Length: 99
Image (cartoon, rainbow, N blue to C red; front, side, top):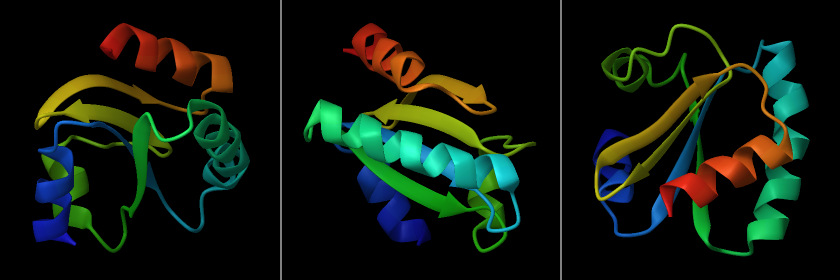
């Protein structure tokens, strides 16, 4: 995933990365909220999921210490990062601020 991850976050589009773990209860609750968010923004933001257990080096590089952690990138630059569950409105607000 490492090579693809770098290519994706360095793109011109907004990219929201969901750092999660399969054993994480709040991550499972965040997933349908992300799906609602994706449906509402209709392609304005690319959403990718990174399993921290399978991609430990990426998680360490971005100092992901708890899950879920969401990070928004554009052109390789980190624009926003928050840990914990987020509502659809919080995600929409983050996109508006980053655009």
